[in-house]
Image 1 (tube, rainbow, N blue to C red):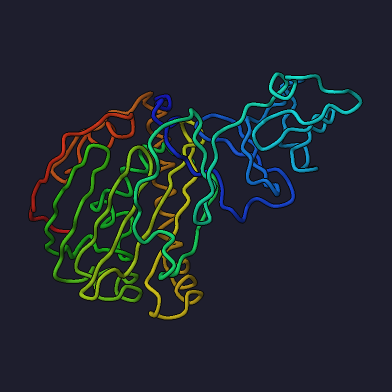
Image 2: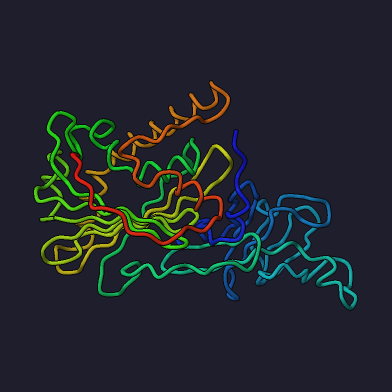
Length: 336
């Protein structure tokens, strides 16, 4: 199966929700890299999940005295990886660094804990309403999925699958509506724009959505997607999704839902979105797993680009860390 690209190491990847970090260390795998996350009064720490002494998993340890204590011999490490204590022994000058665990760059923002495995790289892009105080927000983490991260990105950017995988829920396979599709390209992002005069015909679209005439879905290289739905009064819904690769064939999606304040209480909007989107999430999860089954069955991916694949191979290029030539394409007339 296709290995994970190096671009993932130099970009911010979401490892956990802030609320996941409690009194115990948290084991996570990001891009085939085992990590341990923990919170102390000095902040959040992220270390490679291996004690440098005898390679014991640090995630089996405990948070103690402002650091993480390995359960094998009790070595204690700070959030920066420095060895703060070797029980029964005195540390000599320089031992803090010589005996250190391997730290990983970590950042906490808007309820998200993000890591950057390979150090310096691009910062997070401006994500507009994500985390804005004048909006309501909630996170939805759905555990580890079976599938390739690249295929999950292409799935969420592709409107044409919704007529079949989500037939009757989002759109209808037998009653397609005219839309205008456009594409905008930046050096490290690509987006699709859908303009439609009539609302989608699926029951979820008709029951849940306020009036909407435009949607914009943008991929920020390599694995961050933000989708915005807009109506005559402006933004109706924004979904920011961190597609975190776990291994070459598994991923963890973390989705933050953002809505303008004043359109019902936040808890009610969250309950409605979760209720209506649950079957959609399960259908996409099943589709990615079945797609991977067949990729493994035939030994390698072999994809054709059809007339509806307006983003083409550019999603793959961004995922692998390449840069694109800025462009504006369309609008094109299609039916969804």
